[in-house]
Amino acid sequence: MIEIVTADVVAGLARASLGLPPTPADLNEPYIAAALRRLAGFLCPESPRTLLRAMVDSHRGLVNNEDAFAEQVEEVIETLVAIGDLLELGDVALEGEKVRSTWLVAAPPAFVARESGSVFVLGLSTDEQTPLPTEMRSRVTVDRVIRLIEPQHAEDLGAALRELGLRELSSAGWLRTPRHVDAAGLLASYGAKLAACSRSGEVPDLLVLDGGRNIRSYRRRWTLPGSLTGCFVVRRPQTFGADLWGYAELRDGNAQKLLDLPLSGERWRGCDAAWRIQMAIDAFTGRPQEYRLGAADGGSRFDFFSPIPSWARRRLAVIGREIEPAGCLLSFLVPTCEVAAEEAFLNELLYLARVVE
Image (cartoon, rainbow, N blue to C red):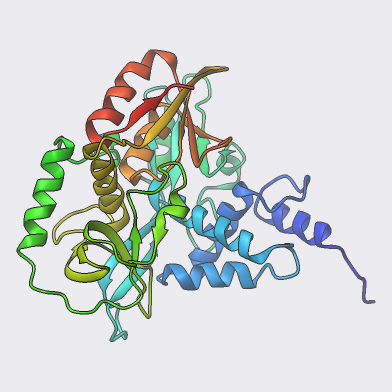
């Protein structure tokens, strides 16, 4: 017997199959993250574009606006890479592949213990989007994209997870940050490396992050080179894999020199390095990127209007927790007692300034 079902019914069944409440039948951020983990468990290693396309194609008919859904999926993929569920490998050719590209690899099951005794669950497998036995999996709480387990009375949760075969990651290793250098020093360092590059020649399909545009509209800051002159963060597409990031010298919109990001030997992703360079540019030119700080239940709320590097995002998620943004791109709830230290961190390593509203 053939039965016609609505999109809401299908969405509810999909949510239930991933261990999420079937109602409301929203294809929201927790659902997208869970579905991507399951999909990545089967597809990876794969390029970010292929994972994005597979996710969007599998939801045709379930979403009203495919372009908006694709943007949301792209943002969640970025978040999964930032927290460590997916690993991004740049400029590599996997076995049987001739083209060097950027690949996403499923991170092995792991966890990070917090001082409170709770743990972040990381990684995935082909069998389950959360690689834990049924009893332990039922204790996992989902906060947007983060998966968290709280300890029971007198429980050594870390020991229990190690016995189950999950690898423990130290907070220090997981939260490792670049060395401190002021904005001028960072730009001087990259400027010297850029100056040492040979002439690049024509670079097709180049997009430029224009520091002269509104610092609160990250997407609108991306533009064609036009007649721009100076040093800019840039990105360009490649046939396979994610966009390539760089730092370029332009003259009347034409690339003179191009420094690929990340630098050889750096552990950070290209976008992480690029976003920090842009933050330094904005601060150096007297228009620092901003964050908003406000009171909230349970602590203080940090709102960001542009992306921040994965290492900064992890730190804020560990010190506090990531929450639903409102009128901004990213938001974190941080204990009030930690606010002064986190503001110093944002100012010293990311050159951000608090906006007064």
